[in-house]
Image (cartoon, rainbow, N blue to C red; front, top):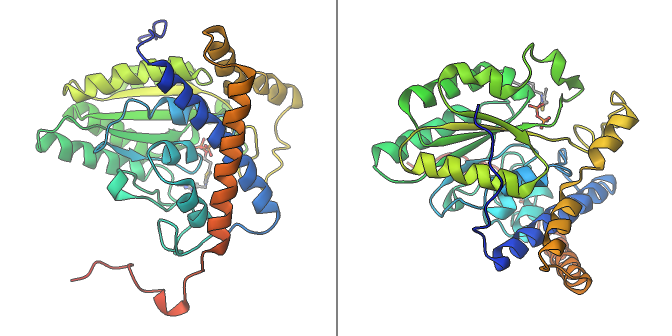
Length: 329
Ligand SMILES: Cc1ncc(C[n+]2csc(CCOP(=O)(O)OP(=O)(O)O)c2C)c(N)n1
């Protein structure tokens, strides 16, 4: 298993700050979602990715227009980083016609093919063979694009995962599998999922480079991802990155996660990826109190505007129910 090297500083200060802004946006956006859920304003479930921002953002920064991502239920960070407007995303989550699915699906099933974002189905693991399909198409068309497929630790127990990883390795597809190992699949802890130490070990027998890394250091993840993306763009084949992280909230907002020990939760919470990244930026003299406050104000204003837009947007009319469901022939 290859270990990540010390992240090299090949990112400009502007981009480093942009990453910080995106992290804050994701965190505040999801905090607002949790509040809206309690107010009964959300249709469907909310699967919080709070605490996992370093994974969803760190794996997106080296992607280019034309690359394809297959995010999961906890990957709002991927969707926002790949270019969905927070207004449109919130409208999607609130079931409004201005959302990506025009009010016909919740967050999980919404995608935006123009932006290379492919929505998930409810079946865990089902996106992985599709990501392989996209990667195969990129390869057959002789492009340098890559596909990125996200999966949870629990999802790696599904057959789809093993078939996809095997197929990608055999065909040397330009796909990167990102495993968000947040230690639990709903209430099932990782040791009840598998008898090996981690998902990287579980997958390495398929013949692709697999990495298991800390999932709360955005620069470490970004650096490793950049190497895997580079490899895929040069047609050297797929990679798998397992990020060891933790979800702060329950599986969904209705779940109080009482199956976890408080000490464990607090220990992981102390590894919050945002203050960690903040400390890095401060050390590099890129972030002052004033800049941090300005960013926070901007993020809050952006979310307020998104909420106003989503609340004002209409629900679909009943007669629109069958529109856009089937391809026009
Ligand atoms: C095939 C399948 N089995 C069960 C479920 C129900 N389910 C939805 S999310 C989930 C837990 C998934 O855990 P994991 O893959 O670790 O991702 P996480 O939610 O922790 O991010 C389960 C069991 C499902 N959607 N699909």
